[in-house]
Figure 1 (cartoon, rainbow, N blue to C red):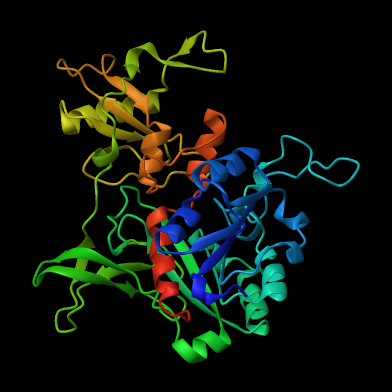
Figure 2 (cartoon, rainbow, N blue to C red):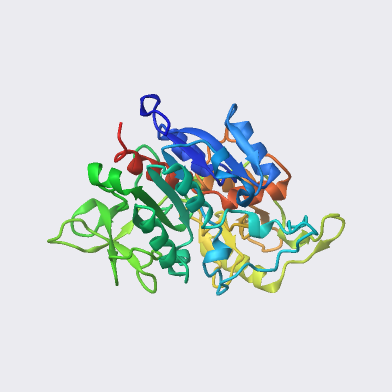
Length: 406
């Protein structure tokens, strides 16, 4: 175990866009090692963390004895392997293997994150003080999740779970993100550390306005089973919402959020909506937008008049104000959110229309503008969409650090 006199250290098995490393580094951790199978993600880590040893390889192939010991392991398992995603409980497609049993080029999607068993291998060898990670909330309802917890219990670790939303989370010195992104987060703390220092406080709060008490720090209220805080935010059909912390009041409160307009670069010009869009990589011919998209733009113009607004191309989504957070940027890079800027005549075809830029999406994930992304445009989109939100990683790092020996 690295000496505590030099500060707390971390090992990262999922580099991606580096959201987790950035959050932990900002909280005072020293990253010792990072690994990812994707060459563009590895290049991103090397550009933003000069001098850090970053290994390009599938984590499944790495001998844990060759990885340095650190106080904290930070690693987020692949969501498609262990959790339902749009009703699916397995990877979207079979991975084609070559004669040596290795995935052939073009089947990288199932390898975009390590599996849930790789942190177990590291813990068996190095016994870190804590293991930290995040995933979609459905991960906690997957068939293997409880078995996974039993494995960590057998290794001598106590789990602490929490469900957070990046658009609400109150973090010391950092604003909420203009993206509604529900995540399940955890810290598995080694039992001897838990006995000496207690468990980390992973109870999220938000800035909110109580109709009776005024500005308050809202606390989570679970509709069912608060002992297993796994779910998504929402007052209607979701699992939790926020209430006033004054028990005599206890009123439901709405989080104060940050609008997507805060991160929009209005100097970036879009195309005329009526001209359609380029279909295919050649960018030679334009295709008219579908009627469903046209209806969303028309509805936004009718509601917001000449003001810019967001169009979200997802089922059950339409248009939204720049004063609101956008919906989750997907792991595929979030090609669902478009900025619409009506002209003075409010004509649909004359409306300026464009997707959010990679930098705007990166800001929605909490990345500062000086954080660079390597690789092609599609590789950069994937890194941004797959990243751990920086404010979530920073909050986790601070809460875990508070119970580690100094």
